[in-house]
Length: 177
Image (cartoon, rainbow, N blue to C red; front, side):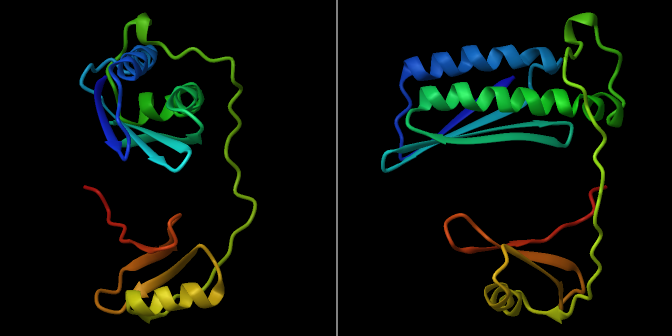
């Protein structure tokens, strides 16, 4: 994998970088492409250290985020989460992108029994045309983490959501071609 380390309010030591690279190397078995991008973002707020690891592979994003006392602890917590996600999505990674047959050294090995996802409730609701600012106001009024609306300018379905830092974000989905 092609590793990119980004530090925010944190100084990455050479030793930490070596440990991170060594531990991330064990995920190479899941990716035959040595140029698979892997981004590690490390930040520190007060006494808490935060680590986010994101891997992009053929349009699929595998991501893990951990907050803990030290970055060394975060590495040991973050990597098993990533590996579980890779095992869980192995079928999607293999079949959906019609990847060529892999040599046996890249086979996914798992003792996890995967259960199909079942949708057990469906809600239908009307969306009203409004501006993103109006939707953000409605988000505050209803007290939810997100609010779905139709953008009055272009008719597209969009989502405003409450971010962890308390600010409001806007999601504008589009169809990838």
